[in-house]
Length: 206
Image 1 (cartoon, helix red, strand yellow):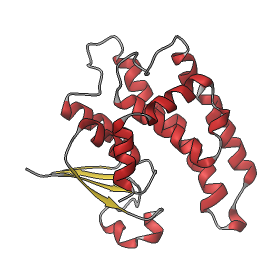
Image 2 (spheres, helix red, strand yellow; image 1 turned 135 degrees about the horizontal axis):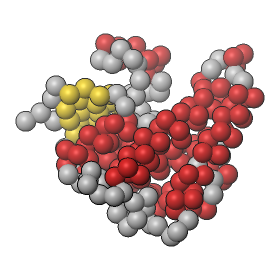
Image 3 (spheres, one colour; image 1 turned 90 degrees about the horizontal axis):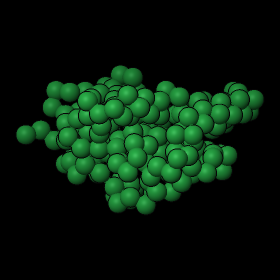
């Protein structure tokens, strides 16, 4: 039996996958890389020619998209998911993929234009615009949670919560977490209290 393997940078998007693995109790091998690996670990390009994180394998399966890998793991384990015949299935999928396409993407541009680019290429105006873009789009999550739900799907924790909560982790890293609404902040606080989250944090600190 092959073991799943995850290439990961601390608190990068691959943290979604690491957290999901810990929540699901699946065995895995973790490879920690410096960020960004395509610059600091050039040999990584031989493994993943995109140079992006995460990179995940499960036997012959090779995947690079954090939300997609979380969905794969949940389906494989039969846990932390909403079934297709459940009325909540569409909302579940939407939050799972909104987490990256809508909530994480603009923050990667904040990261790029405040920290990753050479000083002469940094652009505070672009970074500020995309920070506001991100904050505005958390409204979908904020309104959804306003009815007192514990998690996005109600009382049931799923990989959609992992995926969305990661966007809030990134917001905290970039210093604009305080601009989120109270329901988003509540979700983030509850997420951090989970044993799976804590185990993932410990795993990447090794």
